[in-house]
Length: 77
Image 1 (tube, helix red, strand yellow):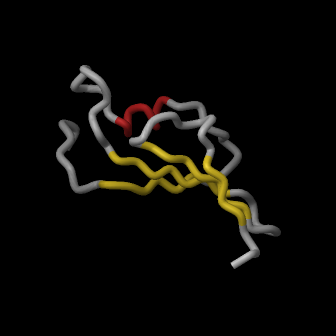
Image 2: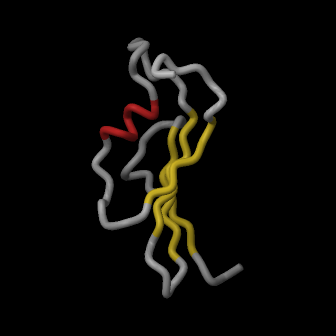
């Protein structure tokens, strides 16, 4: 299809465990999609990709769809 564009927002999310995509399909508003693989980050066992997403500064005037690998153990559940 040529009626929409998808842009990887590498300025918002660095690393291999999270991608943020901007989807543009005029005349609709832009939508952000955050795809995460909730891998532990570094040596800190409490530093998860989802925690990084929650603490990120994202545009607050755009819808955000969060998707990813939810079949994993996390201490919060």
